[in-house]
Image 1: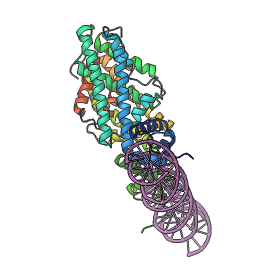
Image 2: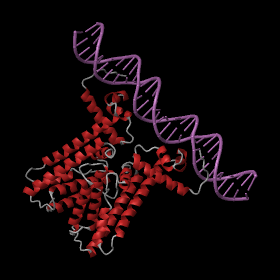
Image 3: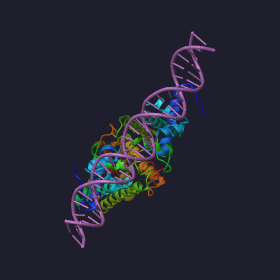
Amino acid sequence: MRKAGRPRNQTARRQALVSAAGRAIAERGLEALRIKDIADAAGVSQGSVLYYYPELNDLVLEVHRGAVEGYLASRQRAYEEAPADDPAARLRALLHSGLPTMTDDPAHGLLYELHRRAGRSPGHAELMASLFAREVALYTTALEVGAASGGFTLAASAQDLAHGLVALEDGYGLHIVSRNAALHPDRAQELILAHARAVTGRADL
Amino acid sequence: MRKAGRPRNQTARRQALVSAAGRAIAERGLEALRIKDIADAAGVSQGSVLYYYPELNDLVLEVHRGAVEGYLASRQRAYEEAPADDPAARLRALLHSGLPTMTDDPAHGLLYELHRRAGRSPGHAELMASLFAREVALYTTALEVGAASGGFTLAASAQDLAHGLVALEDGYGLHIVSRNAALHPDRAQELILAHARAVTGRADL
DNA sequence: CCATTGTTTGAATTCCGACTCAAAGAAACC
DNA sequence: GGTTTCTTTGAGTCGGAATTCAAACAATGG
């Protein structure tokens, strides 16, 4: 059996472990997460995992941080890739990036899984709150721009409406990842869209 | 140490165990649930717990069932205790019973805790879906009655609006039990209320 | 009251996974 | 080349929790 010694740098290894842990969590779930799973997913021994993360919670927190940043970046990208001169299209893009498409959407699944820790771990709670706040900020901008130059007629403050949109996504998303057979992702998507149309006054969303 | 033998009936014992398990789960969380915790909470030995529930998951599922039924009953009660001739008051009562008041509201806390299993356990998924459907049904009725005789002007079908209200509750509730410091329960409550006002056209909700 | 049957207990056992650690390999530095 | 230092490994240890089980006990029925 190979025994590698002193490879490149630590950060790369850590990154690999975080990524492996993310896959393991998405696959087996937080409750069933075992050091061995992470080690296997990363292709290293159990000892190595402990070498870099003597405290497993630190690793899980890192996974959470990565998932939040990645998800946020992907939504931001979706927003910015839509034409800047078409606020409705931009909002539509945002709305489209906020719901799990299938019952086992990997990105959303991982996030909901990690959010489970928020109730008992301040670190995770903070990450979850930060994600919420930044999503709200994204929507707020999108709505304000739309009101300024996209013909949106906001039914309330952009802030309040943004909160509502994110909460809706989270609520519907929760049921989708929880395998609610009566609530198809398409239906949820359409319900959110209808709501967005109503509060912006743009029937063409 | 006492050694009781052949007491009354089984159903009573099972009920006591379910209740004890519920308390244990609410207190320590699902991940940290130990047979000993349940036994202690029920004031019996570990052996007794296994005697009635050789499969621990069955017990947890029973806890979930009880939590769902109890929660639903309490919302139904809230609805029915409001004056039948005042649809707005009834809707208000419903809206008021759907959000955790504090970050550690016991009823909501237990439900969100149990919902964590839905992603991987069909039984829990079914319970969660059933809760969602029945909450939607409650709101649908409240909205339809309001439209028929309470001066509500519904912005969409009662069904769709009901879905939205429940999803909003679930979304905001998720963040509240997850200890989002930036989202105070009162604020969430007010946001939901504002939304309800908008979609019913009743500014006095 | 004796036998039977359903219940309860807690000590013993088993199981599983986290954690330790000595040995060994690989780069870096001299 | 030798030495030092960082990494990696996996077998072994440890501990906590699930599970088993024989013994004790209480109600019920005869």
